[in-house]
Length: 178
Image 1 (cartoon, rainbow, N blue to C red):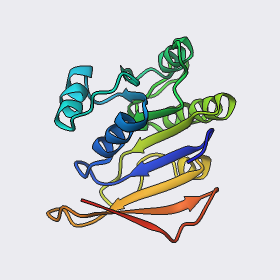
Image 2 (cartoon, rainbow, N blue to C red; image 1 turned 60 degrees about the vertical axis):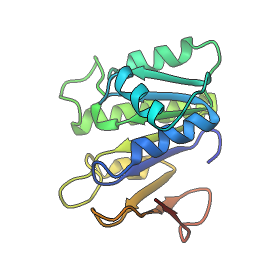
Image 3 (cartoon, helix red, strand yellow; image 1 turned 180 degrees about the vertical axis):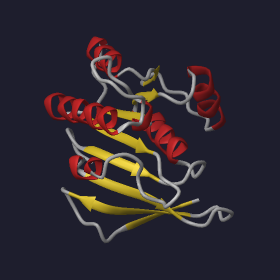
């Protein structure tokens, strides 16, 4: 995961995407943008994970223009940002609800531009459909640098992290998490 890379991660709801990325940010610092939870809810999870980092910033926001403005106004530009989730973001300049093809595509384009210009690694969490594919336009997977999926059985604690696309490295490695 290098500066300027954009990583899309997805799996079924409740499988640990948000928890894993929050735990990672707790170790290295960065910004966690949440469109699904309040700051208080994220703080409760951070407390449960015993995260106590002065370099972790929580931003509860769904408007892409406000998110970009907040990032650019930070005193110390974060080197890693998590977007949870891309389907919650909207732009004032576009028609359509959050999660629509146009909104998802525009928000992703803005985040990619930010990542490349400011050399920030951005993790984007994506919802999945009932069929198990990433919700939103298929173009989303083509836009990002890396696409990862969590796999596993619903009632088994083990999860496999599989990379389906990686512009910077191999796709034949897996990570196993509990």
